[in-house]
Image (tube, rainbow, N blue to C red; front, side):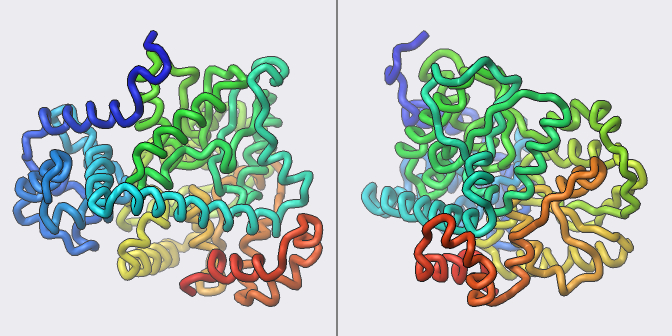
Length: 435
């Protein structure tokens, strides 16, 4: 096993860059498969030249305007991965190209951008979650990090929530209730203390992203579970595809395997079937994302096990990791949402269900604009089991007014000792920004 620090995260990223430069044939198939090029206005008529521009960025060159734009708008859709026949992960290639683009601003600017991005996310998560969760509920979903020796016994799994699912905490609370019903022992880990590093990575600060990711891997490994199950797709990609493989090169081994929680539920579908004692007579369409296709298949497997529930397929584009990744193409994002709504209405669904938390936050403000309910798929799982946890985020979001939210949340603001002016600012920007 390598000694700690012998090979750093940035060393591994340089190795990956060298591998891509050596293995890529510039065939352009990844560019042709990318669903973001058209909405972002990236010309793919000469896909090999576009790919060559990306490789020039990786090699330290100036690249091309098209290559820069392509790297900047990558939504980690993953549709490029099966398109490559030469052993390159184009999703990683584009992330590394974005780092090269960001690096042109200088190390100090990149470090500041990553820090600012992370702090904004952290502030919003801290405030919004405290408008919804009591201190005891918050402690259940975001328990204090403990030293390795302080965990009693070895749990079956670690449930890794990521940073900000607790803005929509009913989703994570439903996951815990399902794990309890399955008699799965677990430790919950998440929040800023176990950030995956994606915020810094997206802003081009690979050095900090690596440090954060490696620290999180060490912390997730403390309970001793062989398996970490992630809720957040960004965390799954950043830790599972980037940080963990790099960690193995740095230290010779990894402390656990990591997989999405939905895939675990699909594995246990027969056990879940016995818990689905309440029929759910609904026609359900999913708001699908393409970054982790096995998650979409797993969610459908679980939903199809619910008595009375029919899963309906919609003929709409499927791309991105979560809806927030489409913010770089706002007009396309809005058009896609309307296409999803129109397709759902035409299919006569009773329910359009989000899969991930970020998509759910973007979806529920439009509840009054559609004829069907907007839920997260975990709410359907809970309904089949007789578990109901109210979606307070949705209720607050539909108020549409900061003053109403503050008045409704006065007891929570007091319970957590939050400053009202700061809460007002966060609610205005985080919950109602852009609408």
